[in-house]
Image (cartoon, chains in turn orange, yellow):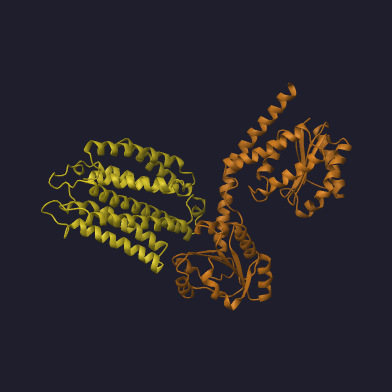
Amino acid sequence: MPVVVIGLSHHTAPVELREKFAFTPARIPAALQSLRDTGLAEEAVILSTCNRVEIYAVTHLEPDNAFAALRRFLCEAAGHQEPLNNEFYTMSEPHSIEHLFKVACGLDSMVLGETEILGQLKKAYELAVQQRSTAARLNKAFQRAFNVAKHIRTNTNIQRGSVSVASVAVELAEKIFSTLSNREVMVLGAGDTSEKAARALLSRGAKSVIVANRTHERAVALAQELGGRAVRFEQWADEFTRVDIIISSTAAPHYILEPGKLAPLMKLRQNRPLLLIDIAVPRDIDPAVNLMENVYLYNIDDLQAIADDYLRLRQEEVGRCEAIIRQKARELLDGMQRSRQS
Amino acid sequence: MVALVLYGISAAYSLFLLQREIRRDHILNYSLLLAGFIFQTVAMLQRGFSLSRCPIHNLFEATLFISWALLAAFLVIGLFPKFRFLGAFVSQLVFGLGIFALMPALDKSQAPEKMLEGFETSLHASLVLLAYGAFGLAAAAGIMFLCQERDLKSHKIRALVSMMPPIQRLELVISWMLACGFILLTAGLVVGSFFMKPPPGMSLRGDFKVIWSFLVWLMYLGLLVAHWQFAQRGRRLALGAIGSFAFVLLTFWGANLASPIHSP
């Protein structure tokens, strides 16, 4: 009996449809039970994330019959009655196994090479194991998928670098400062991206965050969320000597930091390196400060360009990863065939 | 000669690493330099035993001793994987010094009447040459700092994908190496000035190499004071370390030749 897969993902279906077909974790045990009880599948794993809903199944049905029945099952579970075009994709061996490996490696993810999907896949598999809805074939396929994901992560650059603005900011900080553990971060203007960048820096060990915003209440609220402290916007320069990283995203129509203002402040901080992340549009920081010694300025376009370069580096690795996946899938299927024959 | 060949291979491999933006681990490069260092140490020991003195009495020996000291400092620092990248630059330097040392005119025997013997002589020369090794490593770290700083300033992804350490750590390496070198140089000059007697008929006063050494000592003292007392850091410190070592490299042989006490 082959492993088959049916599903829809961000490649084939819009979010309105994906959210309709998604399974909450609480519904999955009953759905797995139903797949077995109706004889649709001998073994099954349901993977449901914000970007995909997939059923991996081992079935005695002919693939065409199995796909039609599984499609009906999914539509009934979602209460979906409208006609569908090509939103569902279906695969049988060896493509189903290759697809599973690709998903585990993040090759099929919205953000190429992301690792969150591997954790989600492990959880989906563990839930199926708990429900006793897996046996030899899916156990082997999923265990091998986790091994292949590890192999790909170790031996290729598919997960190299950061592809989000916030994580690029963290990487930059790590290339400038020996350690982030005693660095203070200042957030000027409480925007969404600056909050994400500050959170990312804190998660990598930054000491604390100071928040300054024109609306002081917003600064206080964000500071509380981040476990830092708020200062009045007019006083942000007074805190300058102690901070090492500034993330600026104010709505000011002009530069709030220029070489003339920064030069005496740099002397006060004994010329320690300073990382300035300017994600405001229009920009908050005069680009000329990047010419000053020990000052490193990145605006939103610079960060995005680096994230795009990383993505290109990852894309260059896709062919290599796919070759490894094809080989590993073939090895798995050959092994399964041999054990069946013996 | 085997050591020189290994340094050459390491230097060529380093060029490959630099072209590849230093994305690989440097364990192979480190191993090549370690193997070369072992061969060089054995060769220096053989020469030392055969002459019954520390092999630092002519320009050939001094040049090789500087490259040996530079490598020794690198091999210790390179035990920490994050500093192994320095090998990419150190290999070029030791290969260059090795080629220079092969010039036949450098390996001259010293005239017996000018020959200074004894433990103090060996200690003086060893300390001073070890200091130049440390200064050389500071300069190599300075070059790395400038490369990394340029990439960070110009927003190149190479700054992130290379295996270079953070620039603040590079600055730390520069200042440590300068401080180590300065202490060794000071100790070497103290031994030379107060515990050694010049050959009969010669005086340390007015000797070109003595004046040159004092100038070098002052230059490095100024660099360290500017760094520690006047917060001259980053690019300026890196340029200072590179410029000072370039001065030492370019004038060391000339200063020796111009000194009746130190020339072969």
